[in-house]
Figure 1 (cartoon, rainbow, N blue to C red):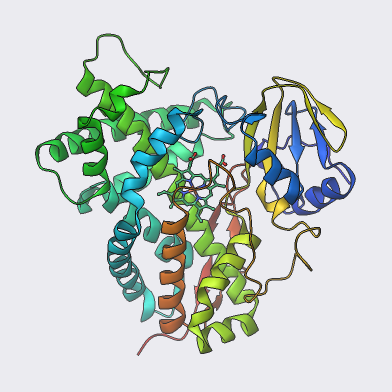
Figure 2 (tube, helix red, strand yellow):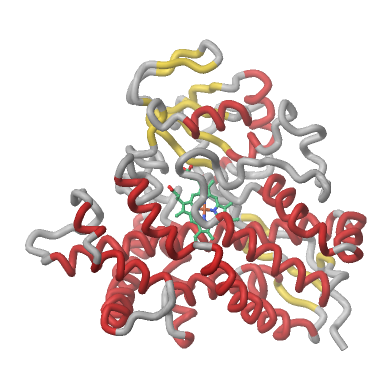
Length: 409
Ligand code: HEM
């Protein structure tokens, strides 16, 4: 087994990665990757342990080991992390998610309407991409006419990960961030003047209460001397909104495309869902386990410690690999089998204090999407050899999945 590959490099994440991770899990659960200069952690129990012990394995030195800058929230230390999280959570209460569900149903219906009569489409382009993207755009107050720009910015920024040695991609990511920041600044100013019942107004309102000012200012990207409070707050809010955009977009997109792939590959399981849609919430958890849309995040060791007798030194990095944990035979019986009634407790959203803030939103999106898709297009099948995947150490990334089905009458 060729385990000596750079685990942070995108090209390593081809179909062979699955066997490699299983081998590591069985033979070297705490594996020193010379190429990445970090420890690769692959067992379910160890990923949970690392995630739940921020005092030993901190996120505060960054969660993407090769990325120089910080992202905000996801790589904050306490107590600032807790304050920020509580503030943002106001936009993710059950009431807000319920309200967003209505919008999401409209978005889903429109997307299905656009293809249902055709009998074929690229599932990624037509369904998996627009659904989460348009919901986040709506949450951020992006005007309908600018949705395509929003899409391009989001893709350009995410493409930066794993491509730090590619100056063109990095320049495109930087430009996208600049354009998107200036666009959002206008939205923030508008919401300051005329608040609405949405996430941006909640964040702007929290800022007016002085919550952002209360936190000590840090080395957030682009911080410039001479900004007054309003400008600084805008800057921090934009960082938070950017994190939400990146975190909520490609992840959910791949939850949806990966989930549909599994249903197409397992017609018996799909048939059970069509006959009994009450099974959909459980099926979504199993999709999240098997698909694991987020591949890995990093931590930095704060003091000498050990796992399974392997010594790990202060200052060293570890990489927790979610798809490995989610298919750990020590945790899941017959882990490579997709069973919609398994109802697994999985790691797809992480665990511990940085547990995915958008988990309820993502679950709602996947439940609504599959309910509507199965009701209207129950017989989807691959029309061109199945999904096309783009390797990435950060997220599962499906770029194309051509399908055909009986056209809607
Ligand atoms: C299927 C979809 C999703 C998956 C698989 C996913 C996965 C994850 C994972 C694994 C983490 C843990 C990071 C860590 O421990 O270092 C995380 C954190 C986070 N996610 Fe998600 N996510 C999804 C959807 C979303 C959505 C829709 C949003 C928001 C719109 C979102 C926002 C966040 C944020 C803000 C954090 C950081 C939380 C913190 O540090 O306190 N995610 N996500």
